Amino acid sequence: MTSTPQMIFVNLPVRDLQASRSFFGALGYSFNPQFSDENAACMVVSDAIFVMLLVEPFFQTFTPQPLSDARRQTEVITCLSAASRVAVDTLVDKAVAAGAGEPMPARDYGFMYQRGFQDLDGHLWEIAYMEGEPA
Image 1 (tube, rainbow, N blue to C red):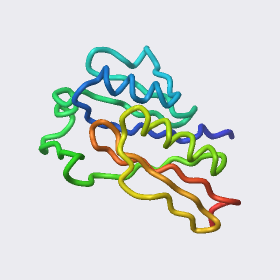
Image 2: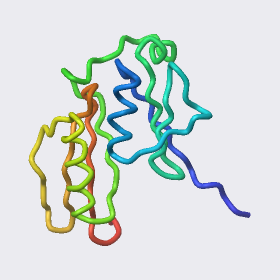
Image 3: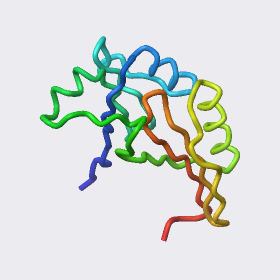
């Protein structure tokens, strides 16, 4: 029996959908038009990872709790792997050039190298390269 790989759909509230699409497009990500409209954009990270960028009023329909302001509080840190240290730096440099902040300096642990950025809505992203497989 073959199993279907598990997929992840990260849902993030955004203030300006077009600005967010432009920002992540500048990082090289594409969008699935089948799941995108004036309320949402389905960003394709890989065959198994998708980020649903949802305008705040639409996002609010999925939860009774108030939205947090990611520019003021940390809600989550989304970490994506990269193929090399150079790939980490390239992606974060693109993000900063497109308007992101870089809240912390790069961290080099020898076996792992990571840098991060804060997107236009304050969401934190870590990009990491690990030598070998994680323990």
